[in-house]
Length: 462
Image (cartoon, rainbow, N blue to C red; front, side):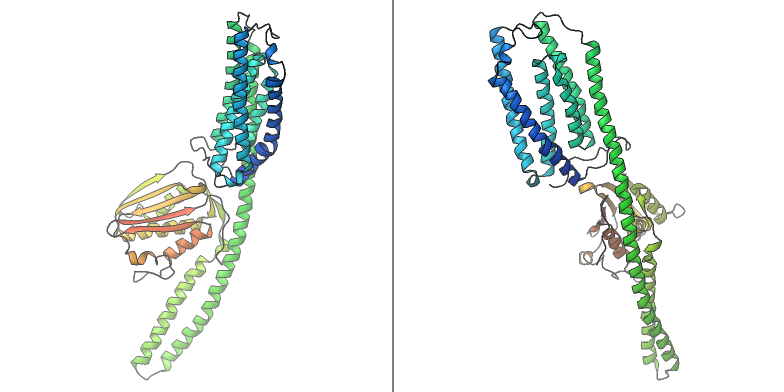
């Protein structure tokens, strides 16, 4: 199955909305509840109903029924044919659903999920019809609505579809009782007292729906917390290993550079043969110093052991980066336009890593515009519940021949740049399973796009 078709309920309060359903967990639930359990049980029920509708005299003995309902022969025959036809339609639809569930691994996940949703609606409607012909308020089939609500809660994990389904079940039952009462009234039979028994049954359905949702919400939050703790521990361990390795490599590189620099310095003091040799030695020393600065910067970046992986609020981190790059004390003539989607998921990362990526991109935009222009910063949902951050400026743009090189280490178009800024942005994004891309047009501006999976294990570059 592919990615889930049900999106998180952004309009609901965060404490009442369940987290984004995991596609694999959703597939497992549908397989267990709907296919492995639901299909055999439904086949058994359909067989029993088929026997009573087509092979027994149960439907033909409705006049007079247990409650004294006297149907005319024509009316009884029409009702019997209508019920049989609806049953055959219901059975045919369930056969189609069964075939889809058998081949669910080859069918896109959104299709399977909406089929399950529609099938649950049909089950509720069919059960209501059966309650009408089996006694209405007195029908024992009422208790099957409780099972349907539990089934819906188990197989439909998305917030809005589950709540909608489980609120429709009491509505279907109410409609069945009302239709049954209307039939009794048409038959000039005294209506039973529907008040207290009906309200008790209705409240029980609503209570079970709320209880199932609340229980699933608690379990979901607990599982989410355990997964986050496991992911945090794994990321910390991976970052420590990566940091120690990078620091050791940088340290090993600095030792020979120091020896070369000392030797060049001694040689420069002793050689008296002219400016040419002295100038060449000076070039060696300058390049050694430049390499030393780059390695020192890498060592500072490689001190990952000191970092702390935590849950980061995307909007807060964006605002913190804006304040750092555009401090209020400095009057930049740059208009910042913000557009943040509501209820964005938190990112599990080190704050310095995300801040470094955001600050580098905003600093690039500020310098490209020479402190004057417009900057658009957005944060929104991407595919698979990812978080997409875009930083767009209306600066001069990037030449097309440079676009494929700007993320390469040490590539820079500035005299004083080290060429590591955008390379670090790319490294930090990929460190957490994300990616960065750029779009630019000369004279119109540049747009950087950062995409981070909300929940994915960090990947180590080999």
